[in-house]
Image (tube, rainbow over all chains, first blue to last red; front, side, top):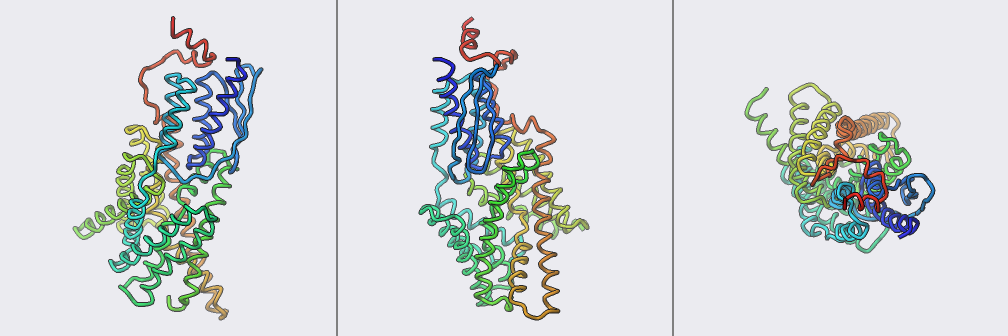
Length: 257
Length: 188
């Protein structure tokens, strides 16, 4: 195989690899390091520019006489730490054991196609989590029950709407509205002593914690552009969450709270 | 100060923080073995913050910073043990410490401010918005910075925890040569 087609095949793989890592919520410097590590194991160098929606990458050989550039879109994917962790291991494996491109491809496909945790289990665990979150803010057991039900409904709505590929900002407004609406029933019917805490906690399962932390990490590590765009996206989601909650507050009347 | 009531309260706090962390972790589909670690880290972190808040005179942002720092340190330790990137379990274990009630009170006060037509009482509402809003932002930043400081202290370890060495290749210079040559060297 001549050097150009070798560069071409490897670039195709690396651009898939890096966009996938970026989409599942890995912070930027890990994406850069993993990708250049694989390139290094083939004796090449990879330089990349990362934006929120695309990755531009040039793969070159050691004396800069041959190079190949790719631009690839970052497809929207749900957060997935298992892919993050296993693809990072794959890059070390490539570095230490000099895996061939076919081996890398087949392992990559296997990792990416692994099914997620059953969504009903996720739904139940998220509801339990939000209920115990309510307890951490010193809510009583009535408030915990309210939050449990509100989260079940809100997260179910979110899962259903995400499956139908409705705009994710609208999904956030809708699910925070319905979750807080159910929790506000506790306020209206004076269920328990801490209905306010139930109302406040019912929407917290929507907080985009991982993009927030990743954004700050990116900025500290010098990938300011990627970090700021992550933070802007997270802020948009939080604003939508607040819009849904405010709708509920306006409907039930704030002066009662 | 350290009577049995206080200790029971801390244990309950740890338990609920662990449950909360498991639930928020599964949203991001972590590796199975990382879920229990994140529950443990959340219990330690949140329990410690509870102790700092009730047992000492620290405010919530500094207490969150210290708790997040401890989570970050422990997560690097565990990352080396089970070969996972540290953020896989340190991020979910931070989530129970997110200042949700302050955020809620900020939104509530903002909605009140929109609807309020009385000038003197709207000044009180502005104080509410500012106080709760700044607390939310400060705690969030304390959490993020606290958890990432250990990552910078142990910078190289952070990126090599997923490495599982099957054999040690001391001659790293081999890697600078193209692949074809590497295979030839191996045959010799």
